[in-house]
Length: 136
Length: 136
Length: 136
Length: 136
Image (tube, rainbow over all chains, first blue to last red; front, side, top):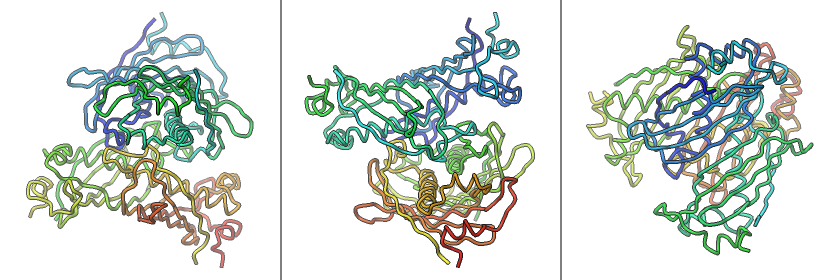
């Protein structure tokens, strides 16, 4: 079942634009990652603590749909949701819109393996699944 | 039908690594874009010329599968293919492997709209479809 | 004379680290730019408005001193100051430290030309120098 | 005394542009680093081997002068030189120009500490200074 949801707002930096005058197409993956970081911090489980407990969540798949422009200094609103957390996988769904108008900017998702320090896939432990709201 | 294919080799830059010691997950989108640039140059149709002729190919969808590590200075081989060029769409398929061993690194695709300077979708003209090898 | 000063805090993103486990050396220039953006917004003169009034502030010189590590998710405090605004130049001085301890991370400055839309150097107008606190 | 010199050519990637239509100001630091990598490989001493021998060359200072525009797909020529290698320091001087015209794009330098794996400054050993051409 679907789990936690977290919202952040931010502005497009000059360094994130390209010569078409909108954000460059790789930037949303950096935003997605920051959104996950803040979602997990809000859940009381900062990613640094996940690493300290011996788990890693390397990205294994990502998907992006570019739905609208966003220019330098535009304020955007990003909603990150834990879509599921099962077997040795966690999936986050992300939606980014213009803060003021709600106009769509980017939709996407990322799928992560759950692995131990040796890189071996493991079932997400209860302390992780519980915090992410997907333990029911 | 499938069209042109183009191969480039390159090394992972220090700036493209992250603290996990492998390439950061947004970098492949930059590599994909560079691969398309070189494919189109090899086809005798540099992207700057496409822009000069009044067309743009904005990205509307991207997909990435992270299949293996690549460390600083590893030499990688990237194969870009025109998957199709139809209606108001062009799709490129990309495969990146370790140059020496052929071990998989990243697979993915990008889908682009074909639009005029006013941003209006247009059917890919013959000079574009022909060069991309998808006019049959 | 020295002008405005503005402080922002932020966390190091995963995408900003490299395999040495600290921030990659080009990232501070992106942070500096964001610090200037926020300083100017706080001064009531967003950079988008400066552009709308027909001025550009292209970077002509930058200097960075790397003074300490900053890891993923470390909270940093960045102080940006208008060092001077004269002839056709504006200079910003920047200091970044660890938020908690005050330990130095990066010091630097950026020097910008003041040019019109045609790229011609111009004397900073009163509305600009005044807002930046350097008109005395 | 001055040491080795190495030249590479490359094209500006779309991802390296910003909305002013020229390269974003942090990109040259990534190019500088790639230039050093290739200089050291040409000297028969890849940076990965320097790391394998237990040394690190962390950046402690960087300086950039932005001298001219470079647009998407422009071909640039970058010359990297070992300016000196002394005490616990190595300095590289870099010049980037337009390949075709020689028009200046960026000049700069980077200064690196020479440290062991524990992060302690050390005198550059003979195998390093010798290869960099600064042992006289």
